[in-house]
Image (cartoon, rainbow, N blue to C red; front, top):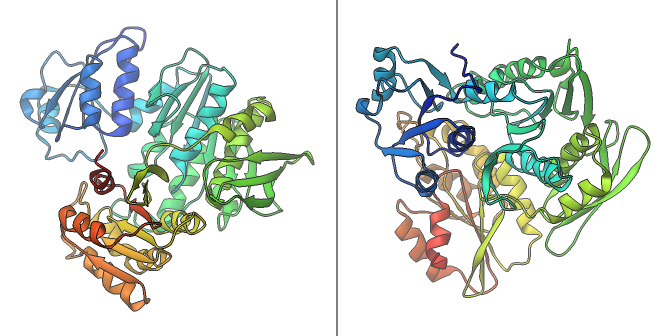
Length: 459
């Protein structure tokens, strides 16, 4: 594997630079003195922001973007071997790295790299940990899968020993990391275009846990089924947490205000009991907060500092994000794209003030939609009314003959009012005609469904 010399900056080219993680890595290298360029299929707010920071971005991926003066090419996991820039890189003999390999090499530059993994909740938990470290004035370097509102970005270049990053399991990219503290939030079926099945996914998470050194620590949700298989044979320290007694850390006396904002007591392994208040809704965020507080405890950050950070944390972009209101209809946007995430978000939303709870859902990838057709319908049935957009293809072709209309049919079997429209224009017109004062409208999915709410609000 090619190794970047961070003491001698060179020219790095990113293929797929518009992605949230790739753009963040590009910014970190730019700050470190590297000459950075990149390409993406489409222009976006992210590519525009990169250009304003002096990073050259080519729109459209072409062989001509790869030139001999490039020292290393970094590829996002969505890039396939038929991509013209991939082919040109190989033909010219230019060294290359995956996004995960680059992130792993970055980790080696820090004394305490912290990697947050799990099928769900990575961005929120990484953000909570980041807020705690910022509140503690530790000057961390951050790489987050969403925009952290307090810094207005998904990346921050600090000058201390702390580096916090999400660790995504897709294509096993997190196996290229070098964490000192690792977090596993949950392990469920997902990314079945890459993994064979749940056992394959569990095997990868076990390998991730094995990356931790003897003097490292794994923080893991002890309520993951057969958790002992994930921690078997580890040389590092293991700390567990969960939502019930029996783990090293667990919450109790959870209560919610009228906006579903939780208050809870946290029990620790030393018999301590501490009080915390969150601004982000739902049981799932209590669980995320417990994991982040455990990281704070490991780093010697006081409960007062952690509590103040969490009490002020209002979430990251596209995580139950309030977008505005129109005609008395409250518009929320959420990134949930897996049945477990959808159920968690809609459960929280049901406790939010509303007359009818509308969910506009855009499935993400054909393979995920086909694999979880019934599970999607079951989770979405927590809403009063569901509007389905067409599937966001992302990196895939529809070889399965799957459509969002099949989810609509499953929802109708469950007795849930559901509609399907192939275009955003049709959805927007339907919502304008049918949402009334007091309704709660959530746009949901990992694609571009957020544009529907933004169009309605005129933003």
